[in-house]
Image (cartoon, rainbow over the protein chains, first blue to last red):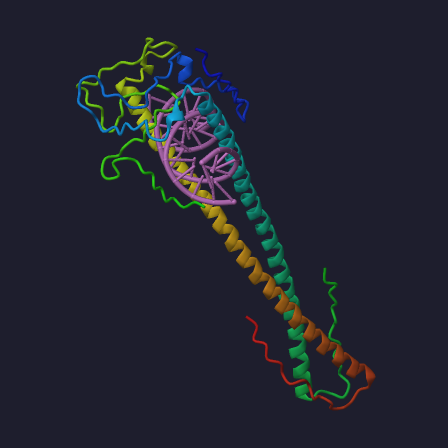
Length: 149
Length: 149
DNA sequence: ATCGATTGCGCAATCC
DNA sequence: GGGATTGCGCAATCGA
């Protein structure tokens, strides 16, 4: 009775050598039955022992079982990897958005300032005109130009 | 996706924290601990080999072992819940940031337009002034509203 | 109705 | 020593 080849060679992400010896390592062969098996004397606990349902191929010894398991394990691994990747992407997106946010705010600040200056200028002019100033008092409005960005 | 609609049809839906019919990879089918395993007829030391390996307190039957396991299980659960929460928060943050970004961009657009208008106005005035110095050609524009925000 | 993808859970190793 | 993380396998369920 050959045992299931356990190749848990999971190299830790951090280089931790995980040995991960599951129960099999303890040389404990799995017991054929799934039912918890009432503990000797004690009355039957709640154990819906239904093994002969539609799971005749549920035998852990079965070749097919092992095959299914291995496949599922791979799928699980894949799924989890994907999940992690997604989470990471999301995190990255947050940073990206934050950056853009700052950029936008800076721009707003700039625009606001520019606008403020122009408005002041405008008001000043209006006053001058309203005051009915001298003929030619163009009042050089130090047109401080701004080059924008 | 994270619909935690667990409809785990574990037998005994009501009451009692039933541990799933795990049977686990351990292959070691312990007494179903649907309750602190009555010390009474607990017996059934399936463990074929003695407490091999290092720790002597590694007995799966050990009370302390079970206690540690249960505690760890709780910790795991807690940790995972936390993790999920965090992920969700991050996702939410993304949405929030996206919204804010849109808002900011709209604002930028508005400010830009305002600025453009004012600049045009100034240019017009400048032209008027340069063209000739009309005594009183005030006739300034009709005070554009713009309350700004 | 087969099979991959998800998900909850327990276990063990590791981190702190 | 003890909770918090993390990788992993199992089983149930979803989904195409």
